[in-house]
Picture 1 (spheres, rainbow, N blue to C red):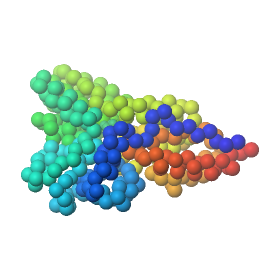
Picture 2: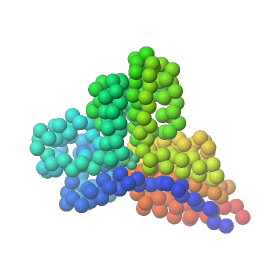
Picture 3: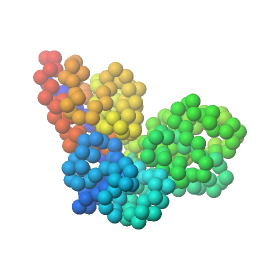
Picture 4: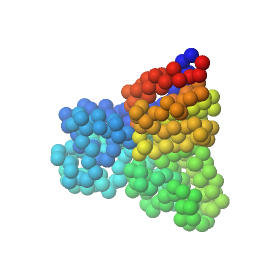
Length: 280
Ligand code: SF4
C-alpha cells in the first residue's frame, strides 16, 4: 500500500516572494541587494538567469538595484540614492505595513519594541525607521526594555505566533502601558496553522526550506510541538533518509514561504519511491 502523503493547506511561496521573483525575472540582468529570498536553490537558479546577489553597493555594476521582499535599512536606501541608483523596490506590502504600524504607535508617544531577529534584514529595515527602538529576540532581551515605560510592540512578519503572545505577556509584567500590534503576516499565520493542524494527524512531518529561512525554521518548530521525534527540516530531496519513513504510513509535508514548488515536488517523488519499504 502506498504511503499517504498530505501537503499542508498553506505551504510554499507566499505572494510577496512570488511577486519579487517575477519582478527580477522580467529584468535582463539584475543586481539584487541581499537574498531576494531565503532559499539557496532558488537563489542559484536566479543566478543562472543573470540575477546576481550582492551584499555591498560597490558590487552593483549597473544603474539599477533590486530591494528584496523583506525590505531594507533606510540608511542603505539613502546611500543607493546618493549613488543615483534606480531602485527596483520589491518590498512586500505586508512589510511596509509594519513600518506604518510602528509610525502610528510612535505618534502616540510610545517607545517602540520590535520582537524579531536583530540580524534579519527585515528587522533591520523596521528598526531603521523607528526613533529609538529596542529589539527583543530572546527572553533575556526583555530587561533591555525600560521598566515602567509606555511601549508599542510590533514584530517580524514571520515570527512564531506563540512567541508574540508570550513576549507581550512578559512585557506587560514590566511596562506601564503596552500597545501590541501583531504584525505576523497572514501567509505566515496560515502556514503555521496549517502545519500545526497537519502535524497532529500524521506520523512524520517533512519541512522543506532554506536553512537560512526564518519562517521555515518556525514551521519546523511548530511541527516539533506535535512530533518532536519525527519532524525533519530539509532543503532538498537529496537529504531525505528512507529510514525516517520505516513504519510511518502518513506523511505530512510543509514548506517555507521561499520554497519553490519544484523542490516540493522532488521531495514528494522521492518519498513515493520509498513505498516499497512499507511493511506488508
Ligand atoms: S512572508 Fe509575509 S511579509 Fe514576508 S514576503 Fe511573504 S507575505 Fe510578505
